[in-house]
Length: 343
Image (cartoon, rainbow, N blue to C red; front, side):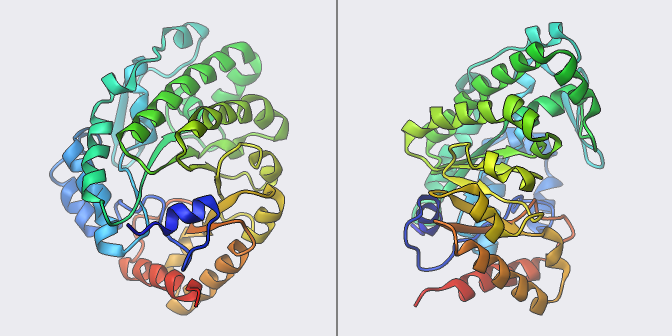
């Protein structure tokens, strides 16, 4: 197996910097769009064979150094008692968002091996398909990010309803975070038990919080999940979007790898995160619309910044955009391998 990704997670010596791309099995690939004509998004997520087929696309077409399981962070919420719908142009929408203490009390912390059996089934398929190829990354949404979507009912530019609940009903909000944390831990363990080689915690909404509120309402729950996963021996990646100003706090998560967005230079992130941590990132996704010359220049910058860390996994600072030219993605992956190769 190409294990450069896992070695970089652990801070071990690698022949070159490994690379994979957030949302790499997505709409920018024509092959993905063809599969999407056969099944809608949630059907793809809930059908193990389809989820596996989509997961494998970037491995076979692009030459990335890791696969990430195809799903969505909100998949876990439906069995808790919420009704979720996906709209092609608007994204996810909860018909019954969390707005009261009673709504939180009604949420069920279920056994993911039972209610989300299609996930470990897909992981097991992928472990067989990826044998002697690349590692598989499992993932889940971090508690605050999940809570924000559940309370707002959809994505939001400022998450005002979430913050109002956080300040008006802090005990209730902590209860919500605790329920999500317990479920998330079990969900990620189910993926590890099925054969995932690493797991990633996506905290897309973390940047909505300032230092005090991140310390109270986010970090303890992330730390709890990471601590519970440590005995598995599987590397844990924590991606806290928009948290360049909170790097010192993010570095206390306990994760083996910290995913860094593009709003902070990687060398500064490395300095502030602390020692004994690998980093992942952090090219701005829009750079992939630039010329190949410019892409290569930015790749060099990111590689230089990442070289200061214990280990570095090249990635974008956020998910790849749907209209990204595939030829530029292939060039990026080749450039990372070529420019970082140790002789």
